[in-house]
Length: 296
Image (cartoon, rainbow, N blue to C red):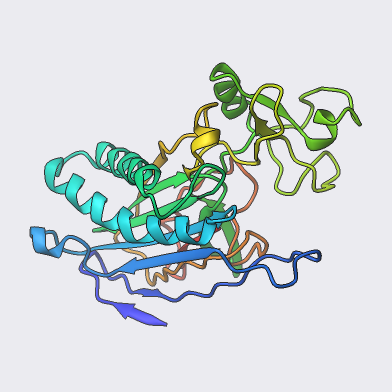
């Protein structure tokens, strides 16, 4: 556990990390493709004080490890450049940074990202304000202790074909949205998956809706945004992040912040709660605690 001095209110910021690959019964030796980054005093060389960056990147595909590591290394660099150019426009800075990292990955001849890529969730703690940028199905959460009960709230929303707005956007770009069973004719075509879902079909059977090229069984993305995945990008799987900004009340008693890379499985530490559940920090409890953590 590392401690970071912060100047906002009477907060204490601590962070730690742990990374564990998901469970793949048929691939017991599958590599952990996660990457993470922590930058204390981010952009201090630009005269910015009390700003700290945390990010999680979950790679997928044959070169997913390299894609995640590329994003881990390049996102902080590009974001710092964009913040220098647009110091008063955090939204523009995040969006341009993610898109530049995506473009540079496409151009990297050492990494084939046609069918590989990475999710990205980045939290910037800036003088009591949380700025969250997300592409894919990794997630940032905040947890608050109220009445001796720890309650978790999402700070980002998974971008997958379960979300009607995301699948409609991809369909407008030419994508076919279907499960593997639907594409192979084992199940009738429908979109009755609901707008929330973490594991798969209606009963969590591991067959989620995916993004496909017309008349082809590629790329099969179970997410609708990512860094990399150039084939998927041709049908709407792009790298523009969704953004969230949350102001922290200055008089909280204690605050803990950390992020944990790894598949979203533990509701306490590495995954957010029900999608769409909003967070409004309580201001009437002297014992409230918060944590911001990402997962991939």
